[in-house]
Length: 233
Image 1 (cartoon, rainbow, N blue to C red):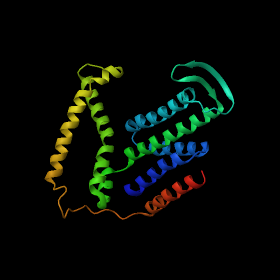
Image 2 (cartoon, helix red, strand yellow):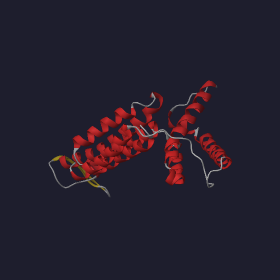
Image 3 (tube, rainbow, N blue to C red):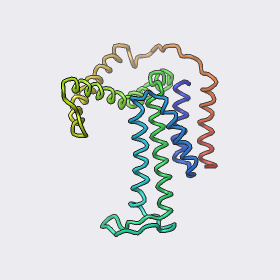
Image 4 (cartoon, rainbow, N blue to C red):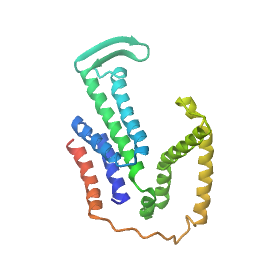
């Protein structure tokens, strides 16, 4: 699938996640997005999938304790804390927490699929009408996997010297070289773009393959999905 329709479809899924209220629809989108993310390489997909699902689980667990809906059947009543107020759990609070947690999972997994599977270089080249904006977005979204790859390489280098990193404090020692490497990479990227004449008139583009049938289906499906989520789900 071409990067343009794929990005539009993922954006539509994320938008539908905000519009949908039905638990079964949100759960189905989460399952489908997890299956899509599993197509990425094993060494890269774990951190994205686990981060999205654990964040959603945190919302589901903590939200009923921190927010009171004032409705539903009261299941547990705890103490009243300063500033926070009464701590209790009701059926309405659990339902709202599950909906919000699944919404967060849908958005996070859609972004994860975009980061892991979409060819950002082809996406930039396809957006001829907004090359500067598309380039800025593509460079920003490629920051996380680039830092992830650099951190893994540095950890292997340190491990080869007999030093093993453990816990957050151990990996925090990589922060300084990662920042320095990012600045050096940004400088090199700016020089490469200038050498290639980025921003000048009359820029050339590499030939792009024509859209396949699946690309048109994905683009139409994105519009239908948002419409169905807004009007029915």
